[in-house]
Image: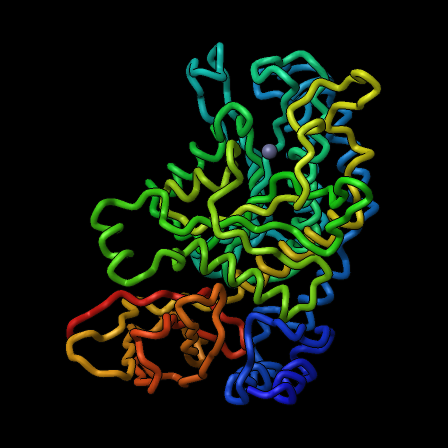
Length: 473
Ligand SMILES: [Zn+2]
């Protein structure tokens, strides 16, 4: 775990293109962990090797992103209760989105079972506080099939709103909220659909977010009901404007929010979390750490700033609907809040401009946020299935730490890593490659450190960390 080892990791063939590790990098890579990386370059044609991920990230186009933001805004309003016929309103916007995903699917060259599938995901919403009349909430879903049943989601909401939450007539450009997240989905579809991944990647443009996360709630509940194995949800909501007050800029940063205590936790769950000191170790938080580590490995320009809370005060987003359904889900959002652009009628008042207009979206920045999403989705979609039943043994008073787990079901799993950190540390500090085993004893005390286990495959792709339960065995 010296600086020279880090350098070796960064210059191995699989990691070509990575930037040097930052001195405060969240992960260090002991020599043993280089082996799966080094061995993985040669085989397994089904998944793109790490270099291929760099290639797909390079294809992300700020010019296309710029054009897509302008096109979305041209529908005038995308309010969930706005017109469904004619050139203005949410109907025209979703027809265009669907056609665009279909064009991307056709251009990908995939056919048969492997073809990109695009559909309207329609749900009838009855009157509710922000829904004065019955309306169809229509998500647009683009599915890029993989070979495993696991799914990775990237989400943005394509609906928009003006000052009054129920005003379906006023202009509501929604360029950044959430035109930015929506066009990130289109661009991700373009660069991801021409590659093959283990997991299925779903790009979901939701409606009804501004009326109470309606589209995401419907979709997440259905997924839970059908026990769809979603390994991670990356929600992008307001991700295109790095500018701050007085010329400040967060050009290289995006905030990444994740819940600590799972939203759907039962009293028994809370008891278990408390006894394990797992307040900061929910699956969503492991997902957030995963994104940060992928950013580090791939050397993305925009890096996530991990925020350990579900969302901002007085705000919510689609990731919460997935959290409620029991899924690991996180939210990307800009660093600087601009309340005169969010949820505002377009106007000038006392010399001050209001409204979420396209000129405030920075296409180059949004392209970098899209790259971060694509990198995280590609790694997650290539990662092996997680080890199951991960547990730390607490039957006796001993100072070392024994972990056991049930091996991942994936045939291409090459081994396991144990990660650990001090209880005060936000991200995993250390990692040890323990090989293709299902138990290990480490000298570190489980009273002083938090541990986790993850699987890696022959290409060096890792799954998100699984936090152990306690077991008396
Ligand atoms: Zn939003």
